[in-house]
Image (cartoon, rainbow, N blue to C red; front, side):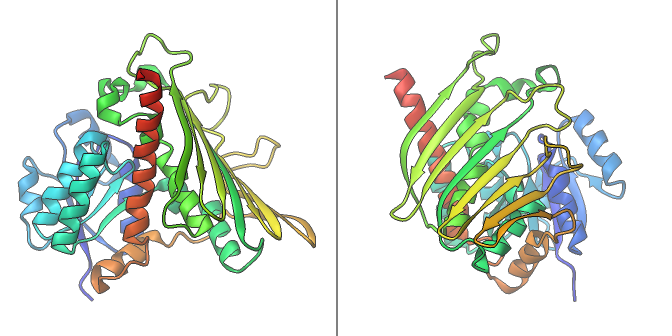
Amino acid sequence: MKPVRFAAIGINHDHITGQTRCLLDAGAEFVGFHAVEDDLSQAYSAKFPGAQRFDDKRRLIEDETIDLIISAAIPDERAGIAIQAMKAGKDVMVDKPGMTTLEQLAEVKRVQEDTGRIFSILYSEHFENRATVKAGELIAAGAIGKVVSTAGFGPHRLRAPTRPEWFFKRERYGGILVDIASHQCEQFLFFTGSDTADILSATVSNRANSQFPGLQDSGDIHLSTADADGFIRVDWFTPEGLPSWGDGRLFITGTEGAIELRKNIDVAGREGGNHLFLSDKKGVQYIDCSNVQLPYGAQLIADIRNRTETAMPQARCYAAMELALKAQKLAEDKIHG
Protein backbone atom coordinates (compact mmCIF):
# COMPACT_ATOMS: atom_id res chain seq x y z
CA MET A 1 0.00 0.00 0.00
CA LYS A 2 1.30 3.47 -0.92
CA PRO A 3 2.39 5.35 2.22
CA VAL A 4 0.71 8.58 3.24
CA ARG A 5 3.17 11.39 2.50
CA PHE A 6 3.36 14.48 4.69
CA ALA A 7 5.28 17.74 5.05
CA ALA A 8 5.67 20.33 7.80
CA ILE A 9 5.12 24.08 7.39
CA GLY A 10 5.97 26.14 10.49
CA ILE A 11 7.99 24.60 13.32
CA ASN A 12 7.84 27.36 15.94
CA HIS A 13 6.63 25.13 18.78
CA ASP A 14 8.49 21.97 19.73
CA HIS A 15 5.21 20.06 19.57
CA ILE A 16 6.13 19.67 15.90
CA THR A 17 8.53 16.95 17.07
CA GLY A 18 5.70 14.88 18.52
CA GLN A 19 3.50 15.53 15.49
CA THR A 20 6.25 14.30 13.17
CA ARG A 21 7.17 11.26 15.22
CA CYS A 22 3.60 10.06 15.65
CA LEU A 23 3.20 9.98 11.87
CA LEU A 24 6.57 8.34 11.24
CA ASP A 25 5.83 5.71 13.89
CA ALA A 26 2.54 4.98 12.10
CA GLY A 27 4.32 4.42 8.78
CA ALA A 28 3.87 7.77 7.02
CA GLU A 29 6.56 9.14 4.71
CA PHE A 30 8.14 12.49 5.59
CA VAL A 31 8.82 14.60 2.48
CA GLY A 32 10.33 17.68 4.11
CA PHE A 33 9.60 20.97 5.79
CA HIS A 34 9.50 24.73 5.35
CA ALA A 35 10.59 27.17 8.05
CA VAL A 36 12.12 30.63 7.81
CA GLU A 37 14.09 30.33 11.06
CA ASP A 38 17.59 28.89 10.62
CA ASP A 39 18.08 27.98 14.27
CA LEU A 40 14.78 26.10 14.50
CA SER A 41 15.48 24.38 11.19
CA GLN A 42 18.88 23.18 12.35
CA ALA A 43 17.45 21.73 15.56
CA TYR A 44 14.56 20.07 13.70
CA SER A 45 16.86 18.64 11.03
CA ALA A 46 19.04 17.14 13.74
CA LYS A 47 16.03 15.17 15.01
CA PHE A 48 14.94 14.10 11.51
CA PRO A 49 18.18 13.96 9.47
CA GLY A 50 16.56 12.78 6.24
CA ALA A 51 14.12 15.67 6.06
CA GLN A 52 14.70 18.17 3.24
CA ARG A 53 14.24 21.88 3.98
CA PHE A 54 12.25 23.74 1.31
CA ASP A 55 12.74 27.46 0.76
CA ASP A 56 9.15 28.08 -0.36
CA LYS A 57 6.08 26.62 1.33
CA ARG A 58 4.23 26.69 -1.98
CA ARG A 59 6.42 23.86 -3.23
CA LEU A 60 4.93 21.67 -0.51
CA ILE A 61 1.36 22.97 -0.72
CA GLU A 62 1.28 22.51 -4.52
CA ASP A 63 2.97 19.10 -4.55
CA GLU A 64 0.20 16.71 -5.58
CA THR A 65 2.04 13.72 -4.10
CA ILE A 66 1.77 15.12 -0.57
CA ASP A 67 -1.37 14.04 1.31
CA LEU A 68 -1.00 15.86 4.63
CA ILE A 69 0.41 19.16 5.87
CA ILE A 70 1.34 19.46 9.54
CA SER A 71 2.11 22.68 11.36
CA ALA A 72 3.23 24.09 14.68
CA ALA A 73 3.69 27.61 13.36
CA ILE A 74 3.15 30.68 15.53
CA PRO A 75 -0.46 30.15 16.69
CA ASP A 76 -2.01 33.09 14.81
CA GLU A 77 -0.53 31.74 11.54
CA ARG A 78 -1.85 28.18 11.79
CA ALA A 79 -5.33 28.79 10.42
CA GLY A 80 -3.95 30.52 7.32
CA ILE A 81 -1.57 27.65 6.60
CA ALA A 82 -4.38 25.14 7.07
CA ILE A 83 -6.71 27.04 4.75
CA GLN A 84 -4.06 27.22 2.01
CA ALA A 85 -3.36 23.52 2.34
CA MET A 86 -7.02 22.45 2.29
CA LYS A 87 -7.72 24.59 -0.77
CA ALA A 88 -4.84 22.75 -2.46
CA GLY A 89 -6.42 19.39 -1.70
CA LYS A 90 -4.37 18.52 1.40
CA ASP A 91 -5.51 17.20 4.74
CA VAL A 92 -4.14 19.10 7.74
CA MET A 93 -2.95 18.33 11.26
CA VAL A 94 -1.91 21.28 13.44
CA ASP A 95 -0.70 21.77 16.97
CA LYS A 96 -3.06 23.33 19.47
CA PRO A 97 -4.37 25.98 19.35
CA GLY A 98 -5.59 25.46 15.83
CA MET A 99 -6.46 29.15 15.60
CA THR A 100 -6.50 32.25 17.78
CA THR A 101 -9.82 33.93 16.91
CA LEU A 102 -13.43 32.93 16.38
CA GLU A 103 -13.21 34.47 12.91
CA GLN A 104 -10.35 32.15 12.01
CA LEU A 105 -12.34 29.19 13.35
CA ALA A 106 -15.33 30.12 11.17
CA GLU A 107 -13.14 30.39 8.06
CA VAL A 108 -11.36 27.09 8.73
CA LYS A 109 -14.73 25.37 9.14
CA ARG A 110 -16.06 26.92 5.94
CA VAL A 111 -13.06 25.87 3.87
CA GLN A 112 -12.97 22.40 5.40
CA GLU A 113 -16.64 21.85 4.63
CA ASP A 114 -16.24 23.21 1.08
CA THR A 115 -13.20 21.06 0.31
CA GLY A 116 -14.07 17.92 2.25
CA ARG A 117 -10.56 17.77 3.66
CA ILE A 118 -9.59 16.67 7.19
CA PHE A 119 -8.65 19.37 9.69
CA SER A 120 -7.24 17.77 12.83
CA ILE A 121 -5.69 19.27 15.95
CA LEU A 122 -3.21 17.11 17.82
CA TYR A 123 -4.18 17.84 21.43
CA SER A 124 -1.02 16.31 22.85
CA GLU A 125 -2.17 16.16 26.47
CA HIS A 126 -4.77 13.66 25.27
CA PHE A 127 -3.47 11.92 22.15
CA GLU A 128 0.20 11.78 23.17
CA ASN A 129 -0.38 10.95 26.83
CA ARG A 130 -0.70 7.23 27.51
CA ALA A 131 -2.54 7.65 30.82
CA THR A 132 -5.20 9.79 29.16
CA VAL A 133 -5.64 7.22 26.39
CA LYS A 134 -5.96 4.45 29.01
CA ALA A 135 -8.56 6.44 30.92
CA GLY A 136 -10.60 6.68 27.74
CA GLU A 137 -10.43 2.92 27.30
CA LEU A 138 -11.49 2.28 30.90
CA ILE A 139 -14.41 4.71 30.74
CA ALA A 140 -15.59 3.28 27.42
CA ALA A 141 -15.61 -0.14 29.13
CA GLY A 142 -17.80 1.22 31.94
CA ALA A 143 -15.16 1.22 34.69
CA ILE A 144 -16.60 4.23 36.55
CA GLY A 145 -20.13 4.40 35.16
CA LYS A 146 -21.37 7.60 33.60
CA VAL A 147 -18.96 10.55 33.84
CA VAL A 148 -20.52 13.44 35.73
CA SER A 149 -17.53 15.68 36.41
CA THR A 150 -13.96 16.42 35.30
CA ALA A 151 -11.32 18.70 36.77
CA GLY A 152 -8.23 19.30 34.66
CA PHE A 153 -5.04 21.08 35.73
CA GLY A 154 -2.42 22.17 33.21
CA PRO A 155 0.48 23.95 34.90
CA HIS A 156 3.50 24.79 32.73
CA ARG A 157 7.03 26.07 33.35
CA LEU A 158 7.56 29.58 32.00
CA ARG A 159 11.30 29.51 31.21
CA ALA A 160 10.97 33.13 30.08
CA PRO A 161 14.58 33.62 28.88
CA THR A 162 14.18 30.77 26.38
CA ARG A 163 10.91 31.99 24.89
CA PRO A 164 10.66 33.80 21.54
CA GLU A 165 9.23 37.30 21.29
CA TRP A 166 5.85 36.14 19.96
CA PHE A 167 5.28 34.05 23.09
CA PHE A 168 4.62 37.24 25.09
CA LYS A 169 2.23 38.86 22.58
CA ARG A 170 -1.42 38.18 23.31
CA GLU A 171 -2.54 38.57 19.69
CA ARG A 172 0.00 35.99 18.54
CA TYR A 173 -0.52 33.13 21.03
CA GLY A 174 -4.23 33.75 21.55
CA GLY A 175 -4.38 34.03 25.34
CA ILE A 176 -3.75 31.38 27.98
CA LEU A 177 -7.17 29.72 27.73
CA VAL A 178 -6.81 29.34 23.96
CA ASP A 179 -3.16 28.33 24.10
CA ILE A 180 -3.27 25.83 26.98
CA ALA A 181 -6.84 25.22 28.18
CA SER A 182 -7.98 24.05 24.74
CA HIS A 183 -6.35 20.76 25.83
CA GLN A 184 -8.68 20.46 28.79
CA CYS A 185 -11.72 21.63 26.81
CA GLU A 186 -11.18 18.75 24.38
CA GLN A 187 -10.79 16.27 27.23
CA PHE A 188 -13.97 17.48 28.93
CA LEU A 189 -15.93 16.89 25.72
CA PHE A 190 -14.26 13.51 25.15
CA PHE A 191 -14.72 12.05 28.61
CA THR A 192 -18.28 13.31 29.07
CA GLY A 193 -19.33 12.37 25.53
CA SER A 194 -20.55 15.91 24.91
CA ASP A 195 -20.87 17.82 21.65
CA THR A 196 -20.55 21.20 23.35
CA ALA A 197 -20.92 22.87 26.74
CA ASP A 198 -21.98 26.09 28.42
CA ILE A 199 -19.26 28.32 29.85
CA LEU A 200 -20.37 29.35 33.32
CA SER A 201 -17.31 31.44 34.13
CA ALA A 202 -13.79 32.16 32.90
CA THR A 203 -10.89 34.26 34.13
CA VAL A 204 -7.41 35.20 32.95
CA SER A 205 -4.77 37.23 34.73
CA ASN A 206 -1.13 38.20 34.97
CA ARG A 207 -0.35 37.57 38.63
CA ALA A 208 3.42 37.70 38.76
CA ASN A 209 4.91 38.71 35.40
CA SER A 210 4.19 42.41 34.99
CA GLN A 211 7.43 42.78 33.02
CA PHE A 212 5.57 40.93 30.25
CA PRO A 213 2.28 42.86 29.93
CA GLY A 214 1.09 40.67 27.04
CA LEU A 215 1.47 37.46 29.03
CA GLN A 216 -1.40 35.82 30.88
CA ASP A 217 0.16 33.55 33.50
CA SER A 218 -3.01 31.99 34.92
CA GLY A 219 -6.58 31.24 33.94
CA ASP A 220 -9.58 29.01 34.63
CA ILE A 221 -12.86 27.90 33.08
CA HIS A 222 -16.03 26.44 34.63
CA LEU A 223 -18.05 24.37 32.13
CA SER A 224 -21.39 22.61 32.30
CA THR A 225 -23.70 20.41 30.24
CA ALA A 226 -27.06 18.95 31.16
CA ASP A 227 -25.26 15.88 32.49
CA ALA A 228 -21.77 16.94 33.63
CA ASP A 229 -19.66 19.75 35.06
CA GLY A 230 -16.05 20.62 34.38
CA PHE A 231 -13.35 22.79 35.90
CA ILE A 232 -10.12 23.80 34.16
CA ARG A 233 -7.09 25.52 35.68
CA VAL A 234 -3.95 26.45 33.72
CA ASP A 235 -0.90 28.53 34.61
CA TRP A 236 2.79 29.23 34.02
CA PHE A 237 3.89 28.61 37.62
CA THR A 238 5.61 25.21 37.55
CA PRO A 239 8.57 25.61 39.94
CA GLU A 240 12.11 25.12 38.66
CA GLY A 241 12.70 22.32 41.15
CA LEU A 242 9.99 20.06 39.72
CA PRO A 243 11.62 17.51 37.34
CA SER A 244 8.89 18.01 34.73
CA TRP A 245 7.54 20.94 32.74
CA GLY A 246 4.25 20.58 34.63
CA ASP A 247 2.38 18.42 37.12
CA GLY A 248 -0.57 17.87 34.79
CA ARG A 249 -3.49 16.15 36.45
CA LEU A 250 -7.01 15.13 35.52
CA PHE A 251 -9.74 14.02 37.91
CA ILE A 252 -12.71 12.19 36.39
CA THR A 253 -15.74 11.40 38.55
CA GLY A 254 -18.31 8.83 37.46
CA THR A 255 -21.50 7.47 38.96
CA GLU A 256 -19.68 4.25 39.96
CA GLY A 257 -16.08 5.31 40.52
CA ALA A 258 -13.36 7.84 39.90
CA ILE A 259 -10.06 8.14 38.02
CA GLU A 260 -7.10 10.38 38.75
CA LEU A 261 -4.36 10.88 36.17
CA ARG A 262 -0.89 12.13 37.04
CA LYS A 263 0.26 12.66 33.51
CA ASN A 264 3.87 13.78 33.69
CA ILE A 265 5.11 13.11 37.19
CA ASP A 266 4.00 11.49 40.44
CA VAL A 267 5.10 13.80 43.22
CA ALA A 268 4.40 10.94 45.65
CA GLY A 269 7.49 9.20 44.34
CA ARG A 270 6.80 6.80 41.44
CA GLU A 271 9.22 7.30 38.56
CA GLY A 272 8.26 8.62 35.14
CA GLY A 273 4.82 9.73 33.98
CA ASN A 274 1.57 8.16 32.78
CA HIS A 275 0.17 7.25 36.22
CA LEU A 276 -3.50 6.29 36.63
CA PHE A 277 -5.41 5.67 39.87
CA LEU A 278 -8.80 3.97 39.68
CA SER A 279 -11.23 3.73 42.58
CA ASP A 280 -14.53 1.86 42.41
CA LYS A 281 -16.74 -0.38 44.53
CA LYS A 282 -14.01 -3.06 44.56
CA GLY A 283 -11.33 -0.78 45.98
CA VAL A 284 -8.42 1.25 44.67
CA GLN A 285 -5.83 0.26 42.09
CA TYR A 286 -2.82 1.85 40.45
CA ILE A 287 -2.23 1.34 36.71
CA ASP A 288 1.13 2.05 35.10
CA CYS A 289 0.23 3.29 31.60
CA SER A 290 3.77 3.66 30.25
CA ASN A 291 3.27 0.84 27.71
CA VAL A 292 -0.20 1.85 26.50
CA GLN A 293 -0.33 2.24 22.73
CA LEU A 294 -1.04 5.68 21.25
CA PRO A 295 -3.51 5.20 18.39
CA TYR A 296 -3.87 8.75 17.03
CA GLY A 297 -1.20 8.59 14.29
CA ALA A 298 -2.36 5.29 12.83
CA GLN A 299 -5.99 6.38 13.06
CA LEU A 300 -5.30 9.66 11.26
CA ILE A 301 -3.50 7.85 8.46
CA ALA A 302 -6.48 5.49 8.15
CA ASP A 303 -8.82 8.48 8.09
CA ILE A 304 -6.81 10.05 5.25
CA ARG A 305 -7.07 6.85 3.24
CA ASN A 306 -10.70 6.00 4.07
CA ARG A 307 -12.17 9.53 4.58
CA THR A 308 -13.32 8.57 8.05
CA GLU A 309 -13.15 10.27 11.49
CA THR A 310 -11.61 7.68 13.81
CA ALA A 311 -8.71 9.75 15.19
CA MET A 312 -11.07 12.48 16.37
CA PRO A 313 -14.52 13.52 15.19
CA GLN A 314 -14.27 16.71 13.18
CA ALA A 315 -17.04 18.29 15.25
CA ARG A 316 -15.17 17.75 18.54
CA CYS A 317 -11.99 19.19 17.05
CA TYR A 318 -13.88 22.41 16.38
CA ALA A 319 -15.99 22.36 19.55
CA ALA A 320 -12.96 22.25 21.84
CA MET A 321 -11.44 25.30 20.17
CA GLU A 322 -14.78 27.12 20.17
CA LEU A 323 -15.09 26.61 23.94
CA ALA A 324 -11.55 27.87 24.55
CA LEU A 325 -12.01 30.88 22.28
CA LYS A 326 -15.35 31.83 23.84
CA ALA A 327 -13.98 31.40 27.35
CA GLN A 328 -11.00 33.58 26.46
CA LYS A 329 -13.33 36.31 25.17
CA LEU A 330 -15.56 36.08 28.25
CA ALA A 331 -12.57 36.39 30.58
CA GLU A 332 -11.08 39.34 28.75
CA ASP A 333 -14.41 41.13 28.39
CA LYS A 334 -14.69 41.09 32.18
CA ILE A 335 -11.27 42.72 32.49
CA HIS A 336 -11.90 45.38 29.86
CA GLY A 337 -15.48 46.05 30.84
